[in-house]
Length: 185
Length: 185
Image (cartoon, rainbow over all chains, first blue to last red; front, side, top):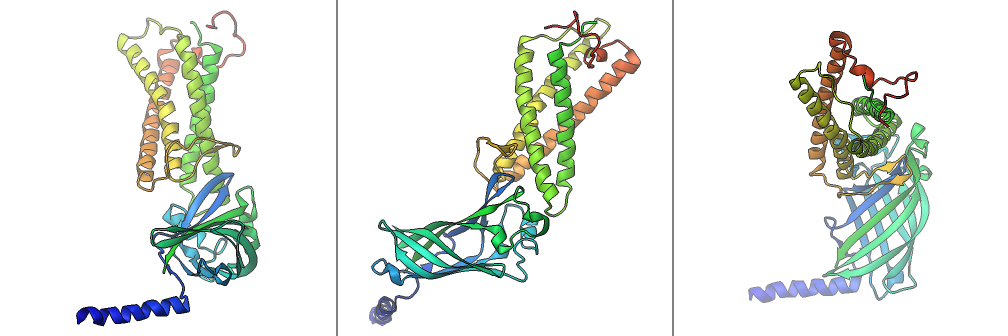
């Protein structure tokens, strides 16, 4: 009796999931979002410790996929607690006023090869929104799927680094956002 | 009294100036609060100076292995000669140990060294939040040890110059007038 009482709701849930194509469950602990920036020509990678990603993806219908990513700007870990506080301040992310950076997809298309997608969407950082397009790869890992990609941006387009930090010989304008998001149904 | 060879004198003073400069810069830059462009520049300059010192120390050691320095005068006690040799040996150890520890510290912190912002130097170890404080402490204490030995070295030089007045220090002073026969070439 116990068994069927559990089985019934479970199977109903499975059917409901299959029909509604609910967003995948993101495993934030195993996912990473990082920024690679060049400081006096030295490449340094820093991870965002807090973010959330909602991915709605069905391999059979990639065109119907949707993605929304929210990143806590104050969570960038440059390797030193003091420096992390600095990066959250007004000149950089101004996290008190703009706590989240967001990416919302507007179109996702299947790419040339299998497992490749071309993602377009709106990236908002520090109150500034820009249209971005970048390639993304999807692969299966265990029971989940891994979404990986690299998105080059220009920090000054988002006012990241104001005042004397506009000097690109100190910190280059080009910043690469790297992500690897693991999600399962 | 037989002077040091011109190469030995050039190595000595070039490295001396760089060590004093890099040491002072190290104290100043770690004392800057927050994140400023000056701090970013000083850290880079400090690392470039350290790499330069390491390279010069390597050349100096190679040169030293093929060229014996002039003997100490017999006016020096046996223990004084032994102490002088031991101190010079230790200074050689620090000339290598201090920059190598700083280099590893930078790598452990996830910041590779790009010499003069142009030449990326090998990342011998991976970034490691666990090892970072270890290399930091090693670098700091090697510096303090080196500072103590340099102080002893300078005190001994003053003693020979102004108390013993035995002409030993003059052998290492740059002398643009008498660059003739007494040098070892």
